[in-house]
Each structure stands twice: as structure tokens, then as C-alpha cells.
Image (cartoon, rainbow, N blue to C red; front, side, top):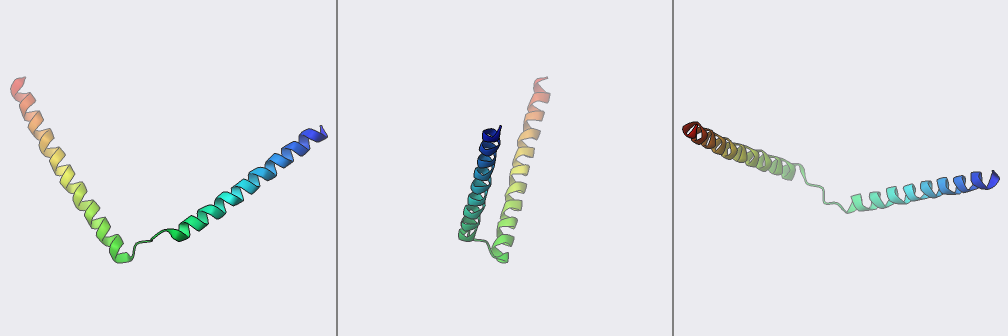
Length: 74
């Protein structure tokens, strides 16, 4: 019974050690990230919104066209 408890404790410590190493590595990687400025973020957001609207319009047009064509066939 004592060996099972010590093995479980060793495994738990190993998990804690691995978690600390993971968090430390994640923090180091986050320091390397190029975070956008407020202006860049605004520009990227506007571009995404415009592209969503363009694709939404294209899909709406295609859907309307196909609905019209199916209506003619049926």
C-alpha cells in the first residue's frame, strides 16, 4: 500500500512539474507575440467586417439566383 501511495504522489508531482513547465513556456511564447496597436486592430476589424458583408452579399445573390432557377424548373 505504501508503494502505491508513493507512486501516486510521484506521478502527481510529475504532473505539477509538467504543468509549471507548460505555463512557463506559454508565458515565454506570449512575450514573443507581436500584439497589434489600437489602429491596427481597428483596421483589421474593419477589413473583416467588410469581407463578411461582401461574402454575405455574394451568397445571398447566388441563393436568390438558384431559388429563381429552381422555381422555373418546378
